[in-house]
Amino acid sequence: MNAAARAQIDRKSPLSLHRWLSPVLFDYWAGQVNRLWTLRQPLARLVRREPAGEGACTLVLRTNRHWRGMQPGQHVTLGVEIDGRLLQRSYSPTVLGRNLLSITVKAVDGGRVSRYLVSQAPQGSVFHIGEAFGDFSVPTAAPLLLLAAGSGITPMRSLLRALASRPLGAPVDLYYWERSHAGFSFREELLAMAAADPQLQVRLLATRDAQAPAARIDNVVFDSLGDVPLAQRHVLACGPDGFVAAARNRLLHHVAGFQAEAFTPPPVPAGDQGEVQLTLARSGRTLSVPRGRPLLDSLEA
Image (cartoon, rainbow, N blue to C red; front, side, top):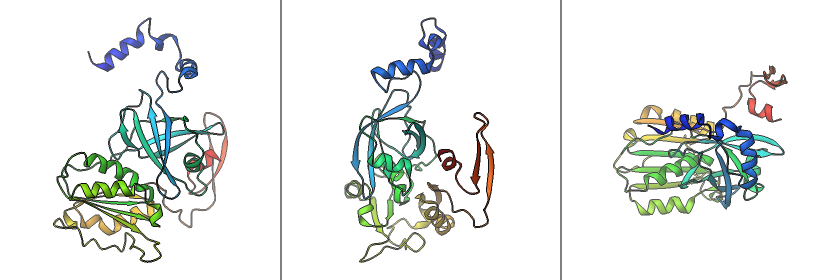
């Protein structure tokens, strides 16, 4: 009998908590003892906060037993309660051990959740955590070109940690862009991984360096990829929408494979003016949403 069948029988048993106690009621009373104790809801507690470059920090989280884990490079949705409202944002964690993971957050101007997580969330805070999603994965034994900008380094770090658990079977080159040298997250860790394996090359590119600003993705010359040329590389790119679009335009038809994920919406076309009226079915609430504005922003306003 498999685990799913046993769980189904357990829920029908006269002694099962699922039969006699609602999840909401159980979670309330169990939470008085330990805030991670729930009947079904995956939760994570903030264990500590670590600096991770200018304006960013890494949050180390401990999950309860209901969170099912993830593959390197995937994302999760984190539910954060601020002023009595549950706000949700997606992040790409790094698994540190059993029931232990980290997310790196960069404070965004006007970002309600990011600024709270970076500087205000107290140790011991409990967050909702969703199941992992996303198909950002590494082809087996393929020569890789990893392109990251800003917070796009977080899934790359997770992938590199998984790859570095054994000697690399093919060359891997990481190009990582930030505005300034102070903004690089995981700098020492990335350089240490590169020093430990000659197959891994890490290039840190500061585009607003006062002395020698680095070329942006649409102008950088990929002429130092060693014995495996660009045409044989599988590319993974992650960063703001403009960065990902530039990487796609530059490389899509010149490489062996191309995967990308963007974490900001594309710019709103100039013609998308005016408002749209929306009515929420459950609450009956009516919203006037500017065209092109993310619906989430309007719901949280």
